[in-house]
Image (cartoon, rainbow, N blue to C red; front, side, top):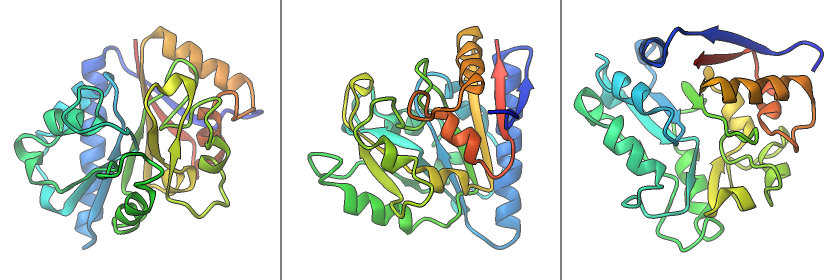
Length: 235
């Protein structure tokens, strides 16, 4: 990429990052609600966002008008520890934010392929575009469930594609997954990447130094974001 399409925002520590990201997310949601629209927040899983979730759950806003969903999900029951839905329910849909409707991506079907139509309908029924989408990034440069070597990676990052969600299977994913597609994510009014630690910064720098999205799928987001991607980073 000749011109890195990011807006890097560095924080002294992870608490400061969480506080700022939560405040700006809440402001974006309030702005959407203030125009008379419903707001939609799509969040990622993993250990990184817990502090952010807990901070955001305390925000004073009309949570009943905010629908929370996931950027992607492992195809597991929401009672399992690796479930992103469980993480969100335990850390974000709490306190003031307990009033927010939550729309999971996993259905009762036995596989993401079997649940694809229902998941697609759930996402289609959300207020669109997404008001805020918060992404994470793995050490292999994956984001959402856009994994290097994923069986549906090309479909997931196809900017001309019509699917809102796709199933994803990849060696690094462990479980089958389902993920929002790139067009849905980059259409968000506010899009951010939340990463922490020197290791993740090194991954980001590697991604910025190349241009093959199949090698490091975060490149697809950076290249196709409507504006420079806000990257929130703390050591």
